[in-house]
Length: 195
Image (cartoon, rainbow, N blue to C red; front, side, top):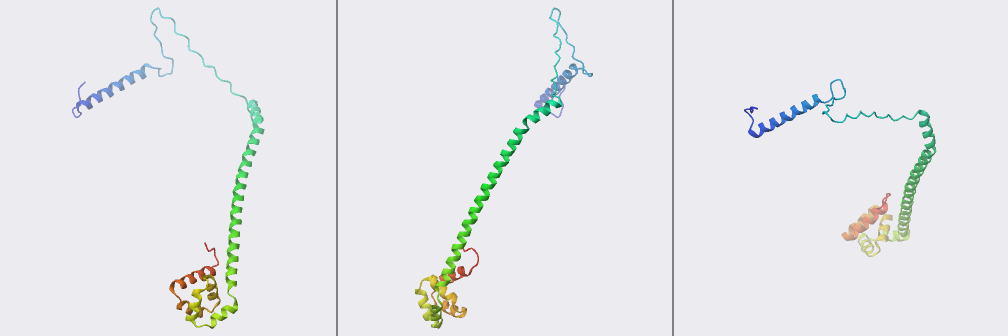
């Protein structure tokens, strides 16, 4: 077979191999079953036993509709029971999820009630008489005394004072003490969750 001039020696060998394989496949396909779909003719050698007759495949009998209906009616109760069990399991899982959420809501409610009670106690600490005393003091003296007092009580007193007077007292205080009191007052005035 002549080589194609543009191919290398290896490529030429590969091309020849591919062509030979293609020719062999073509020959096999023509020598197989005929175009009409008849069985292939077998050649027997002289003295060879005769070829066995082709076996006929037995077709399975398809079940008739009455058998299908009987089968379906026989498994209907089991299928219904299984469906009920699956639905019951799903309902139990949903109930467990609802119970868990209800528990979390109850915990949050208790937390909010505790916070609200703390806020009320905090505001009640500053009695009106104590507030009147600090309201009558000079701002520098009031700032000095409030810096010594418990921070919660000092913040409660400042919240009950007139905002102008409280601002002047905070201005006279040490920066750290004023920042602490301001933070406490801001968190007490908030109406949302402190966390």
